[in-house]
Image (cartoon, rainbow, N blue to C red; front, side):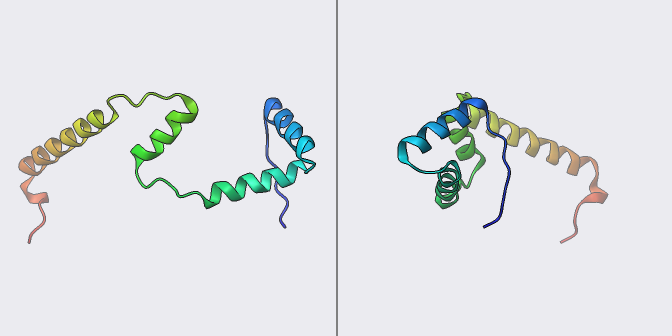
Length: 94
């Protein structure tokens, strides 16, 4: 095993110690179990999925996220078209 140090809030430490005592286990054992569970879980494949997970834990609002993302991409596409039109020498040759 490798030794690792982490910083926990006072509330996290208190809750962790309380659970460890109730289960007759060590704090380290519970942390290793939590890390194993985290690493075994599938990772989200998109930014929207990651934001959805964050919203569940932090209360972040995702209302209209898809619309804002689509508008941003559309604006980027328009800018690219204007840039290509204004700088023909920069176009790639087929």
